[in-house]
Image (tube, rainbow, N blue to C red; front, side, top):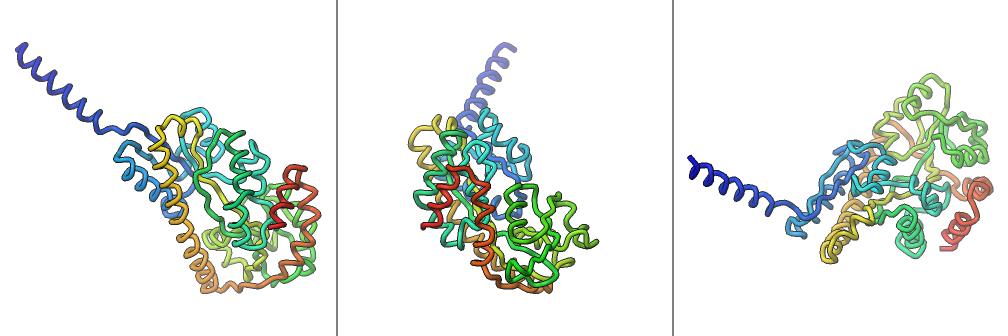
Length: 322
């Protein structure tokens, strides 16, 4: 009986030891707000595959889409507390790093190429350095977001065409001030209320990226997508600095290499998706309208500059000089 017990104990210890040998040295909890079909999550899956393969299993990446670890700010706070490790986040970072406000400033960027030049260059490095210094988060990669466009039931080609249009905007003071300066009557409203308000005529227009225009079925209550492109922005994939610093140099290199691969992978998905979105909305009956971007930019500029502090204004002007 004693021999059987002793033998069983040895076998049990061997099994536990074998399981321990298979366990990763580091586990990264990566939570974000997108669902499993979203290209951000597809990019996160690419990162997971790259990291686990190239670290020979020494790093495990656990993905938590659909806000399973909480809303954006909750996950950032969890990373800072050490109970989560990675997330995808945008202009919320300005709560710590004021320069991150540039991630959603109206008419900061002329086009996609201008945005890429800024984020990939010294300006991006400056923003990322402040994020790391003040939020203790290390940006690993960045994804371009679809530009925000104005939808309406009449074509809008020039700010004069706005003529007091009742327009839903998110509850962001800079957005409200900008659209007021452009001649609209902006109304902050929860996104969940927009479709019904458009249907009932409480508001006459709204502004969002094509992805949200499609998913919210605004084609059923709006005829035109006016290509205002008034906000071009990006988001970062970040990791807690303390967590990254715990890893040996060779594993940090695996993380950075995987992040570079993820960024390129998502960029390809994004380009394909933007093209698909326009085609889909046109097939649903929406008409795309080219607008006088210079006129919109010029009329919005004073309101934008008034909303920025001195540090942000200097960075904004540096972006314009690119």
